[in-house]
Length: 380
Figure 1 (cartoon, rainbow, N blue to C red):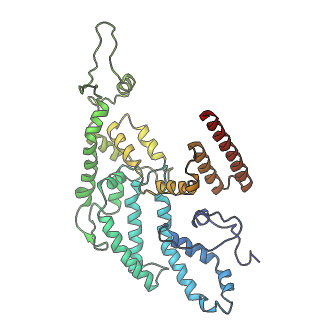
Figure 2 (cartoon, one colour; figure 1 turned 45 degrees about the horizontal axis):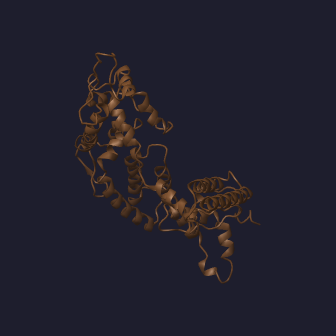
Figure 3 (tube, rainbow, N blue to C red; figure 1 turned 90 degrees about the vertical axis):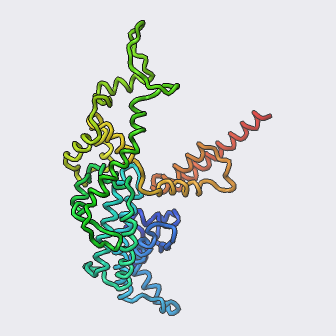
């Protein structure tokens, strides 16, 4: 019966399982509630509802619920809504990740959404045509275009410094021969590469100049620059950062004989772009492998590409701690908190079962009681 009504969760996606107040659904599929504060919750609400269509139709046969029964046209509209929201959900899921560059993808993903919204708003989409969705797409297009036009220099610079994109991305997407204005993708004749992209890159670089000089020319406590000289008595170099200095000399990265940033950027642009489907973490390895050639560019790129595009990762950490800490558990020790957070993560990933959780909690409770007794003995 459960299988007939599609209430078993054997084919559920991981994102669906954790989109409802972080609750694990281990046996049956349940509806997912839409929430204003949870990203893409409308998408998961709709997706789960469509998956439960047979069960929902069956429930609606009850005479008291018949007025809520959905028609075939209603279900068809819900399919269009799901398709409309799917791109937003996929992009949001990827861009809120960590461990790989995300800031460099903001411009391409914004552009992707703008193209889709433009097609829908102009009734050019092959499967989305409901008037309300078209109206919503038009409003979304105008709003998203405003944000797109206000893209910060650091985001543009990050796009350029991603070896999968480089300047070629801007050229391929028409930034050289014109771009989009704030007015819902209205084209302009302005060369955006010359007036926005390159100025953004050098704006970020100029902010790094003083920092790089300080890193490459360390100063002593009295504020004077260290000068590498040979001691008359011992023949040793009195440098407080010998390893860094020697590494720079051996790698030919010392600023006095190195390339200037314009040469580094020119060489970087001449290299062909990396495959778009490569491991995203290889972006960091790309600059590590070329640090000897482009020490300045690699230093800036490493810092810029490490900036997360969203604060979702840190917000998730705060949310996770909320479930660990409570009014009655404010005195937990750091090791206990760490263990509980790990346990919660493993349980969500189904690496441990309920029995393992109960056993662990009993052990940690016994350990806490033992620690409290030891503290009391020390105090006495």
